[in-house]
Image (cartoon, rainbow, N blue to C red):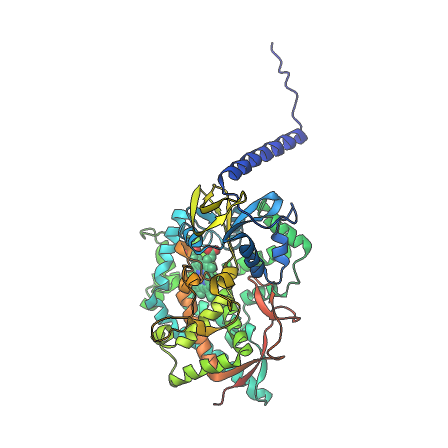
Length: 544
Ligand code: HEM
């Protein structure tokens, strides 16, 4: 009888063999990439382990670093990433437009962000790519039509007037001509109540002083101390080993808590609305609300069928998308108006000239050029989402508007991109770059948006090459462009119009007060030295 002579394999042998195969396959893939992705110039790597990631994460102003590299290496360059990997950074408008247009198919979420979105919000629109993304987006799109936002405008005003009432009461009780108010907190409340009412016909009551678990958890993100070296390390290495996000860091624990809280709220709202709709006691308006449309989309005969899991995920996505970004933008607007009293006065005069009634949806959209300018200048300088990274899911060629020099010194007019290449768009940097927006790119100057009698604005030709909402990358572009941008801009304008017409804003400690970026779910402004992300302003009633 033949007896097998193969020696038994130990666990250790298996692990070593497995690691060797993994490393070999990685090397093959990397060498394949080296051959096929155009090698570009770029900053040297300060560390094999973290590439330039640690420098960017610890920097006070990463946008300026990206800009200085674009100055030195051109409108497309390479940045070293963790464990010897690299990212292609696009600064060229034509290349960025091409990249955005091919999102969800050619350029997809990185394995890390896919995992993070799934863990945080489920398999909703943020998570989806390709066909699944198209289907989910189509089911949500009607809720964000112009007609839908026009209907929602009174909700935006209601929230703003609640703040006005609360601030007036605060000032009356203090007996003083004004009060020091942490406006960021109030902008959070406005955002939450607005998305609750507009999206889900649900009043969270944050502006009425009700405790909301979601705001409390969001607050916990802002209370965290600067990221520890370990957290930064784990964050950067997770790009290569996405499973590291399972490590129970404080941020991961908070994300889990946030997910649980949002799921609980969403489940209750979903069950209630479904019951009402089934019993026929829902008005046409409610049926067209986001939640109404989601439930319709869940019905099996619907063209864009959504599973129950997807409906819940969409609700969580909308809560998070509607809350953070708008609150951050409104807070920045109030900071900039406090730093620039002349701009504040000019805006107030425009609003007062329109008369005592609140601007209609059409006036908010087209009738108040200076309000429009202030809002877009805020969105330009203070993009809440600071950068985006995707991975090429297939080989591609990216066109450039002007040639760049490769690592070997050759001038090229397009870039070869191999499947697996990571590509980043430094949104905040391009929005505020002197290369794109001219010498005064970093100055808050709403007038650049105003048109003269010939329809010419102060937007430089290079910036006009940038595709995206008003030549900004703030809302992304292409098939993934922010679905809520009209919602956000209208809410932003309505809230600002009420607050600026009724109050005067100053920085508590004077115009030179240093504002820095604090850590929140997204980066948030804060007065340097304040605990958490506080933005205390001196607010006085406007008396004419
Ligand atoms: C100033 C406010 C806002 C900014 C700057 C902003 C920015 C963005 C950006 C950059 C993206 C692309 C994200 C990515 O691809 O990873 C995005 C996507 C999205 N936003 Fe917004 N957003 C804002 C407000 C809102 C609001 C108020 C809502 C909803 C009520 C909303 C809903 C969405 C949705 C559903 C997506 C996913 C779109 C898709 O993947 O097809 N956003 N937003």
